[in-house]
Amino acid sequence: MFQVRIHGRGGQGVVTGAEMLSIAAFLGGRHAQAFPSFGSERTGAPVVAFCRMDDKEIRLREPIMQPDAIIIQDPTLLHQVDVFGGLKKEGYILINSTRSFEDMGLGEFIKGFRSERLLTVPASELAMKHVGRPVPNVPLLGAFAALCGLISLAAVQQAIDQKFSGAVAKGNQAAAKEAYDIVMAQETAAQETQHA
Image 1 (spheres, rainbow, N blue to C red):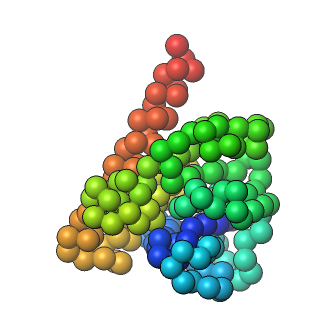
Image 2: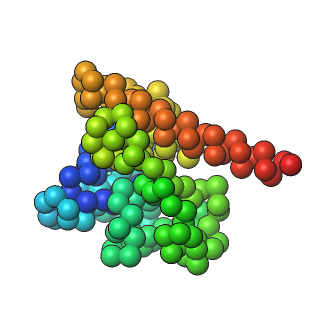
């Protein structure tokens, strides 16, 4: 079972992001579930949502305390909330930011993690460019697909089609694809550096 915890603020589509991740996993042939942590969802309040995916039926229903991956939609939460609690050292970290982990004050924390599983993507900027609103959830799904390979970009695109329509769907698909392409380009560059 692969478990993902998504952190953000109300108004950023945290719950929608988890739901779309589960739809993409389901479309890829996996069992999946998504659910929010019930609390305040007022605009600006910290919000957590969860997604589980597995090749067999999922019976668990409790919050994810030991995630395999963390997606952080709002980097201002990094030093306000324990967003990394329970994350395994082989886990994935995806942060919506233009800054590096070191620039965000996480240099010491990430020692011991696998560098190829740590990623920042300018998701808010991509959403603004393609959708006209800085809602990072969909670009982060595209980046997540490239980062861990558990869901495909095609499944993310299908999930977008199920959730949105018209220009909003097209904009979100373009944002997800650009985020996916950014991650794939970074991975290719890293591999070339290793083999040089």
